[in-house]
Length: 425
Ligand SMILES: *Cc1c(COP(=O)(O)O)cnc(C)c1O
Image (cartoon, rainbow, N blue to C red; front, side, top):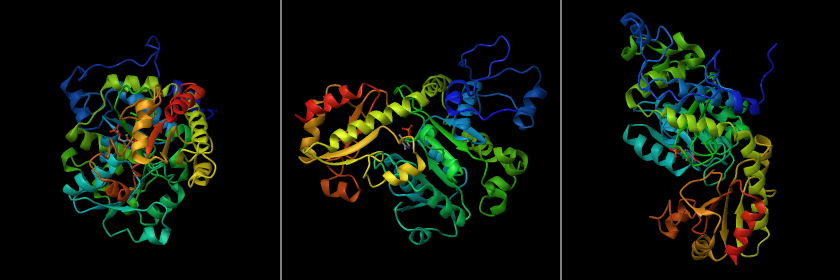
């Protein structure tokens, strides 16, 4: 009897399974191509009649081992790596949407994803309706149209730190016969496994906690294999009718629970080519080997920092879903009882000017455009990522001009708090 392995063990040993005499550590298959004895053999690979590698744009053994590890951590059926989190979210949507289609998306999502969906995909003829994730279901129902093909949200929104009510959104998507796609970057599968709450597809910017050391940009898409594409075949003809660009293959018939990821690989990745380099996949795997140890420490440190900030008179507000009394604490307790993430946002009573002065005085925490790193890092959205907006426009975009995004690292909490203390003065 095989027992289901714990996430800790999968972090360390999942993915690469060396055979007798093979390297213990995942090798980097630094090769664009793979050699065959006969032309016939190679032909069968192109027809998808046999499994095998032929060109790294489609598949590479290093990448596959890492995708398999993430797939097991999420409890999925199939997974693929992409060159970035942006590419993961783009493929996750383009795999089931064409010009004339529509998606429903939580308004609080990451700015890069929001731009992709509402500006760039719009130019491709795909429309996106942004909805308030806290709105009641009757309100959310109104966002759906005949041509809606997916619902999208983030478990913990970057940087809004809104915890999504996963069951509510899964119910909503399924009532409208479409899949629920969740970007699980901030929580990671260590703290939340969206498939257990009804999500159908999970995406990641592996650039963040999974890598964890700010070394490599990357992304991942995991499919639960649970969405019944054939039951709503008229909505998803790309999966349920012959693909003429691949000898008439019908993905759902040939690949079952692997249909969605196979299509995204042999069609989208073939044509658009945003692959993760095997070198980056190797670095990502090293990060994953300690994800189960790092996440609890990020959360423990962040809670201490959030509590300290809360106790200060010069701090106007603190958002951290792990903090008791936070607007999203109850949802966090339900969906991620072991912890949320290491990112906190807060504002100083002195507003925008005080935020810039505070950040300039930090010594341990570095000003960087990044989050979810082992090193504590800090960013002022009004001066950096949202710099082109006026204070009024910032407020309309839901970004407080005073907001500081603080990504708590893995240093000793007393040193992080000491740094904040001296910078606040
Ligand atoms: C950073 C981020 C992305 C984009 O990922 P990249 O790897 O930077 O392309 C997408 N979603 C979330 C939640 C993120 O934090």
